[in-house]
Image 1 (cartoon, rainbow, N blue to C red):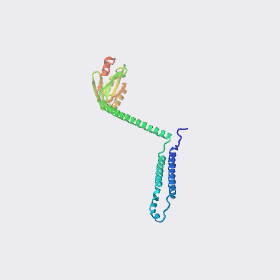
Image 2 (image 1 turned 90 degrees about the vertical axis):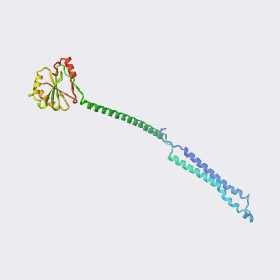
Image 3 (image 1 turned 180 degrees about the vertical axis):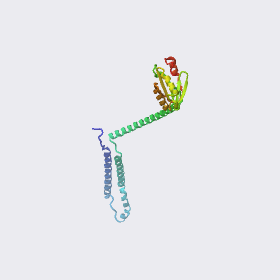
Length: 270
């Protein structure tokens, strides 16, 4: 038989029916005894005549007392019937659930507990991630603020060993030509970045050297200046490369000087 088939138990109803039948039997026995007792007592006590009848008028009032057993039996039956009514009402309202329904409720309760545990674990993980996110954001803000002023290391290792790099720093005000060997710098306003002025003579000198590469170091606000400097240099026949700078910190030429000392770029940046 399938487990989910609903089976009705008749035990509660049979027990209630047995109680009811027992109460009715008691009631009938009580009524029979109370009806037979007066008929048996009548011949033994003949009705008196004359004064005797008058004197026996008093005991005739005892007749209502013969109804006490009936009243007791009725009270017993009524109480039993009331108990039966209450039992039937309770059985109809909160009767036993089928096994399949009980298993379904237990499974639902287990799922609810598991879902609550999973939800608590997810909430704890979310709180942990939120805390880590705040820590990372704080670290990024600190690094961003420091990046603007940290020294910027110029690393020439990405260049070919056959190239001779020269560096020009571009910002909003103009261009600054750097000589890495001794730290000399020459500033040219943006309006003077022309082939006919000092910048043009500087480019003609570079063009005369073999393997020259003009590297434009572009500050965050120097994009327009770098565009002008690149166009003039390309028109003069000088090869151009660009290197964006992340902030406004000082330029660090230590790696370039070390490469000049140990490599064939003895004239690099001069």
